[in-house]
Image (cartoon, each protein chain N blue to C red):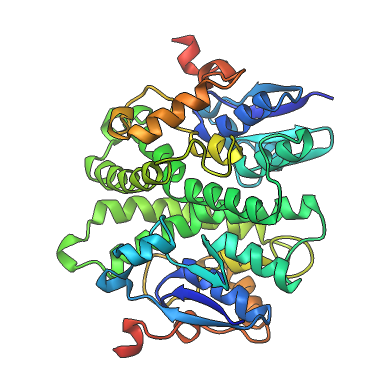
Length: 211
Length: 211
């Protein structure tokens, strides 16, 4: 049975799950969710995911939301990009949480506000606050990547595929790879993995495609 | 060996770990971190946790940061408030991530900005933006608690002790229990658990104690 992922190209959170499914070699397909026209606010979508967010994974009867939980499921099912023991699993978890809280959790709304919100609704002070927070978190990430190739252990894990969720997008949100050399090299290692695909190519159907 | 938790009373993130350690019956003690005087920015603290945050747990030679990872460790070590199988573990993970991203990840900085930041640095527009985001997430939480006592399964888990992290504090941050009746009743169930303790009592040494 082909795993379905409800997603759209602009969502870095969806990308984390899509990239993990793709690189782990599981049979899956993206199902476009028309977020910008309110699809995640419909009763049908809320019945699938009461949290009202993409991504949502449907594998037969098993429905799962939250990118990190889907990544966890894909790692267990494929036997790839996971952990060797409980301590390594918690190391991965540390990065999933740090990313959700301080990197993607800030980069997501900041990029939305700077690029997809109507001009007249954009708020410079709100964006400056989020930029400051994102910069602090990216400094921590850059320092942690000094002298190591991957966030946990000796190879790529779902921790890397989570934390990079928003960092391949071209729209401006105050992130410049040149400012963070360790992040820059690490993103190069991720995009060098066999099968790596940019979010807009992995999850087609977005306004970016139609433009 | 007594588990040490580096923490301070004002941190709802630290509270999640402290409450889990306390309720699970593990032998532990809080070690006060003087956050408001820069203790988390010192080289010693950064050596312990390169993410620069509380809480940090030290159990013998094992050092672990991120509240959710510490909760995971405490659940495994004590055999309490965890999960029966992989699917239940991912249900718990979904809530840890949703909380980190949308509840505590917003309530934390909002409460800080509204109460602990010097008056002249407070920004009404930033706070309004965060209040709006927090309100949306609390509505999702309230809806999910309709007709059920606990977030995952039939009893309390670390998902509950994570998501309530900031919700027992009295300082104003735009959260009023009366607005969210299901959250209100759920918080009552949590504070009714044997051994439940308020964050300022569980993690002494904070400015609130000295006031």
